[in-house]
Length: 368
Image 1 (cartoon, helix red, strand yellow):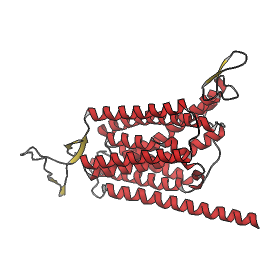
Image 2 (spheres, rainbow, N blue to C red):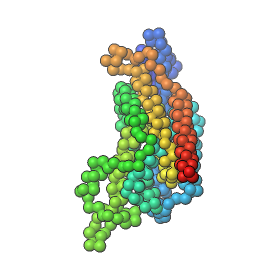
Image 3 (tube, rainbow, N blue to C red):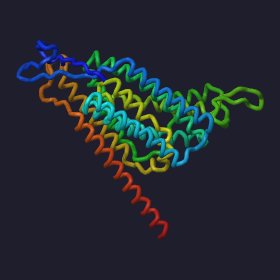
């Protein structure tokens, strides 16, 4: 990956005697040039081709042999996709340096954690609509494809907004802080799924049969009438869930890196293997009782980070007279990665410890 240097708006002028921008002190502060990665078109093309090939291979496996993956199969594929992400991150390190590798890994860990949170809702939806286990793979793959499409659109829109309007960080930051507060107010666990207006409308308007017909979206009744199966309603529910989670995840990843290619690849690798991870975790999802709180801390941290960066590069006339706020720091990527990793590690360990104690207490009560 090649690099190109752009200069922050706070620099008054630059000396380019050797064709290299040199930072010039402005108002007593040293304004450093901002280095950005320039991704060639062929790299984007290769990435999209490889992604499409992986998705097609995944789809062929499900179509040819719909089944419930074993723990061994799920573990193998999950490890495979994690190793791929690590290799890609090391490749970023080798070609573009530690800063961008750190941004990729921080973004990947954050998006993977949000994807696991997404699985909680998927479990509830599968249970709510009583989807047969051997057809849940198809639902999950469709969910992954929809998530990729939706996130791809949000990434493109976010990249354009950020390149044109730096004050968008204020909005992203405020939204993440609001989301974090909402996460903290949620109960530890939930086993109910509230149907939204779109699902209720679909049930009322579309002719839906009362039973599944394999993994098909339509079925032919005994009376010869073509009707949709409940699988279509499940797909709609999964799509709406993906949309909601994309609204959270995209501002979060842009709070870690503003490089569209890293944002895109971090999301792709986070979603890869999500289907296998669903079956691997199984009942373990119910034991991650503190995950929502950990994600709230992560989202809140990234939200504050975005607001601070917006203040440091401020251009809004009604904030500090349109000038950058001198006391607002740019939080380094190593600190972001540390906070994200430690927070998720602590909440995961605390969740497993609490679940283990609760189970022991339940067994003790049964014995009594």
